[in-house]
Image (cartoon, rainbow, N blue to C red; front, side, top):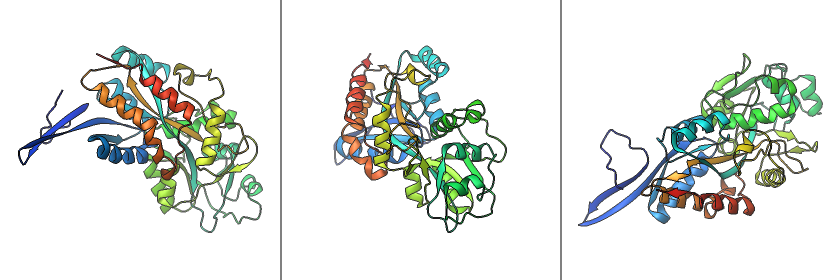
Length: 353
């Protein structure tokens, strides 16, 4: 089905753009999608590569996981991306709107804890200490618990300014899930959520890029971003003390170690047990595992229109297979082969009608 774009309007869905030149006709299929900022660097890379290979344009709008979920449910997007699997409430709403929903893992990556401490090039933080920073129980950089983790490091006598996302965010969900596992007090309140109620003094910024920019430009801040944003902004990321009591940096190797450990465990906690390919990768076992790892999922209805669905499914099959070759250069970890196979099998269940 061809849909025509009128200047000044936005048409959502899969759009076929037709044009003429030198007496010939050409067309570009455009897939409208959006959501998580976590996957945006990879999605933009995919968009360029896929357009060159298939003459199909992926028009991805990065505005947070909650945005992706709501726009799939309302059928504004063909698929949306979220780093947090749909909750039961979100899933029930979507099923009422369009039937069964699939969650297809597209990418796995680290949530880096970034900081701005003049003169400090390496910082170690444990999960319980990080939770207390965000609970505002630890408010100074030279707090004794931070000093104990960083012997010989000259930590400044300065206030800590913790930063967080100010919109519904899957990156926040990954981060708060980890803190909830390390701190019973944090688990109770604010808890794991895409949009938790933070204590006073935790400042909000928009998007992964907003936090990265604020940390880069503001001394004594700390925040959390998908690793690619830390690398692009050239800001340091803390070494986190993992479940094996080892300080680990966020990188493709430590992410892969976390993923390989986590996919062997049976998920029996919501929302992961609601979706066959959703996994909790936070606080994974293993000496090499980085403790704050998450996946970004493509969320789409299992029943797809016959004229639009095939192009979407073919792109997603490409993204979980050939598209993974771009993951490492953008500081993600490629999906394990087992997960790629299961993702492609799940996409085979899409019904075109």
